[in-house]
Amino acid sequence: MRIAGMASNRGRNLMHVADRAPGGAEFAVVLTNQEGAPVMESAAERGIPTEVVARGDEESREDHEERVLGRLAEYDFDLVCLDGYMRILTEEFLDSVPTTLNVHPSLLPSFPGLDAHEQVLDAGVRMTGCTVHIVDETVDGGPIVTQEAIPVFEGDDEGTLKERVLYEGEYRAYPRAVGWFAEDRVEIGDDGEVRVEGDTAGDLPTRRLVSNDHAAGLRYGENPHQDAALYADPTCTEASVVHADQLNEGSKALSYNNYNDADAALNLVKEFAEPAAAVIKHTNPAGCATADSLAEAYDRALSTDAMSAFGGIVALNRDCDAPTAERIVESFKEAVVAPGYTDAALDVLCGKENLRVLRVGDLGEVTERLTEKPLVGGRLVQERDLQSLSADDLEVVTEREPTDEQVESMLFAWRVIKHVKSNAIVFASGTETVGVGMGQVSRVDAVRLAAMKAEEHAEGKDAEGAVMASDAFFPFPDGIEAAAEAGVEAVVQPGGSVNDDDVIAAADEHDMAMAFTGSRAFRHD
Image (cartoon, rainbow, N blue to C red; front, side, top):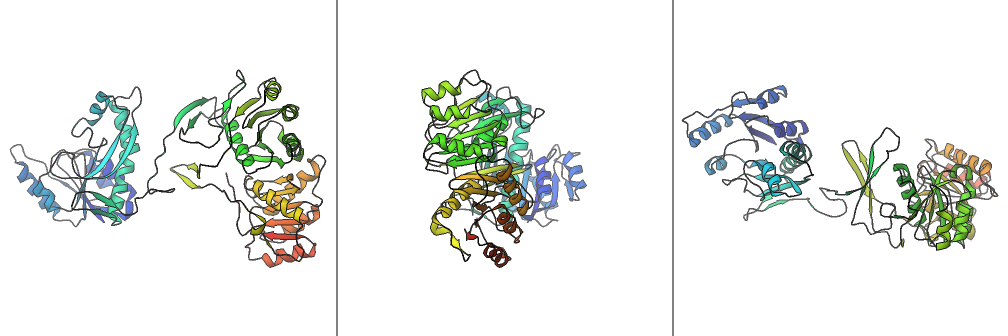
């Protein structure tokens, strides 16, 4: 698609579209009606042909438009894009050119015409934005193609509002609209309504707008030199640390890292219906377990790696009772997260200086289906990993069949490993972790790390007879060899490597049981 751009001044939107080239669109020409308009130099720097057709003092609008059309006739173009072109175009002009777009700095039909930002501020509205619309003979009344909302903040003036609407609104909306036309996705009905193919809703819509409210200022971010704040989604109904009540008044507020770790810990214990406890350090599990009682689950989780658990976050999936609380305060923890607490438990926990006590309420159902990671220049959005395997999902691929107890450990370890950073390995015995190897660039190194943790850091347990879970397939038999050396007797992994036969053969050689899940469980952040 080739574009004819028309501007009277700087034409920043046109140049932004030129730089973005949405849908492969490019400019055939940029025309101005003002001598010396800055857009001419900007266009020339980009190699775009330029034309100046200034209106004479006594020249009629019709005569001037005829000259503009004459200049444009020298170029082939499929779309006209206006940007601050300070003339109302006649119906005759618009009938002589392809579809003409304009961007207006408000959410039409509100605040049309000149001085839109002044109108917005005078009206006292708290939300404005921009509108890309098809130009007709009216003033900013043509069919709307797309809009972008921008908040109006206390203390805004015309200058600050104009800049934010331009950079955060128009720079998004105008290229989007041009891209739709370039991709031939726009249909203008006889009723004047604009329909865009594929501009649909759903979990992963074509356009995604996120609005969160400032919930708290944080002392700093991951490091003291980084500013940070917490933003909250008031529509979230799932139990979360963002909306948790901090019960021990007077204790210091949660930090950026505390929120991050507490969220990871809570999400892990949500995996289990049985009483469960997890201790998280730097978003990775130092240990996790389920048991008949919460206190026992906590003891088993802590004993996986009590050294690394120092200064960690504890999460529980049941109301915390006094026996569990008494165990928690035996060593330093940053925070405890639980659905609720007995009065006796609160007496114990709140007596520990600077231990943050968070009540998230009934864990209930998982309602937030998406998770996202901001990137410089955008964000990644995906479904949360909510897979939950059963014994029927496991494909035994070795000569040795796993026992019922090993299958139980496999399923437990698979729930845990979803919350361990890749490359990830979990050693488990029964329904408790024995060793965790996380965040390694080599899978065999992750196995060795888990084995080292089990041998050197675990208290009252080791890897002998354990089950090993791997979040992705083993590319070579070396991971199985290292696990066998540590005493592992059963393995659960996705499978799917070109070397699966060699890996299975290694497991058979060491009389290990192995099952494939058919799905992996990467977690990279």
